[in-house]
Length: 190
Image 1 (spheres, rainbow, N blue to C red):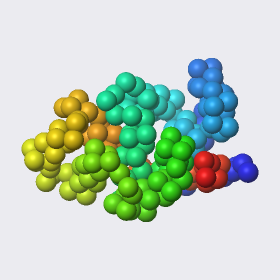
Image 2: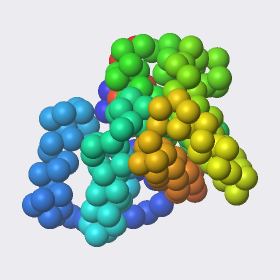
Image 3: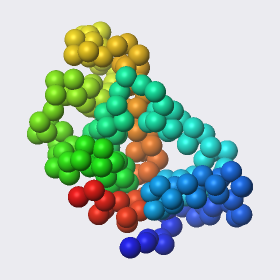
Image 4: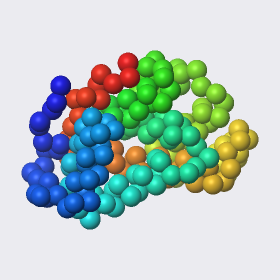
């Protein structure tokens, strides 16, 4: 099923024609994902904004880190669950299902990560991301030390904070603009 609705409630059409580099990036998305994620289409009204978004996303979610790709996606889902961001829950819930090979884990993280059978490391990471989302001003050294005690380095803590911070921002933008997830995500990796 292919969804042809606008990616957001805003009337911000994609640049037409897309610059060659952007079109190539979208073609890669189609080859790898079978679609162009609506978040990319939503940003494509301004190629500089799209490039800034994709650079930050790719750095946080795909670059080298002490956090696995799955762990970063888990943070995205937990933050999005707290913020009730429909777009990110659907899109990153699918990524968790894929990376974990476990559709139940994806659903547990979407609904309530505390019911999921997590390793101590993952639970501490998600507790920190949740606290960042609901009460960031209350984070203290004890919170960072709890992460160190389960094996996270200070660099890892930086990455946890940045991934959680990024999704707190994008959740708010997605919710404010009624960003709609691609229909294809719903059936993936179940």
